[in-house]
Length: 404
Image (cartoon, rainbow, N blue to C red; front, side, top):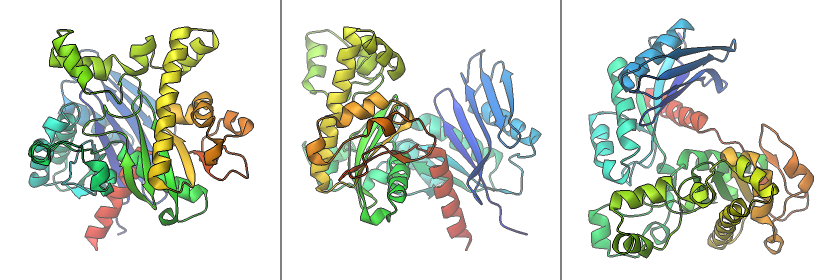
């Protein structure tokens, strides 16, 4: 009998569960779905059987992640793709924070779960939900390999000069304070796909990856290894995002506490949920912001300009870090779809060899593509990210390696 080739990818959020079932023989999707509003009366499960295009919805209360995963298993079984299928090789889990301990995909056991739990203080929003997904999946299929793929792992190759903050190292080490970075599966996938687009080995290519979604991060990738990234101890540092401030003078926090009378929790909420584009103009959807800019809205224009200014600063900074840049790759919702953002981000950087071709930039497409002029010294690319495929690929590779 041939070896099983299917991988179920789970991404457990605090009140949601995203999933995809892939066949690794050809990286095709068999089923995709989302359970949202877990724990509420208005929970919803949307499931699509990709092969025949059939989409089904369940509405009504789903009490917790265990109930959610059982409901997902039921939907998969209806399509003869259930968790009990002998063709299922493993379950791959997105885990946001792996600290310095987890530098690669890892088979989950009790010790691994304990270490992920220890990291909750540096990822209080994400790791608890990721843990719940892991424990639930293990309880349903204890015999099946469960693999944790960490958002932070790709960034563990950063040199200490990039990963350390300039604070007392004894205090930093005691409290695990350092720059971890996030969106690692996306940066890994996109940097590799960019090299493929250029027809080169990733080891030969230096890429600046700009992952621009509601959360946003940049990375400097030298020969396939991350040497710097914009997010830090948490996903708050770096670029201007949908609702996060990005880089900020730390003394702003002291000022808001002492002069503004705000509590730590209030400041946390301000910087993570009521800042960024949303805080500046009341919208965090780039399409709506561009519509407002085109209509002459000054608040939207200022928000857009601040967003681009920060983005351009990081492109320049990572150009300096890398010394030689072969390509700049835009990815994620904004990066893949917002032509004005791409155009504005490289405008004025012609002296660095960066430019976009207006015609190529305006074309919408599904696959990786170059949008720079043919003779550009540095290629500018749009490379759709695929974090689920990256998680499945890493999961399957680890299971295959361990089976031989």
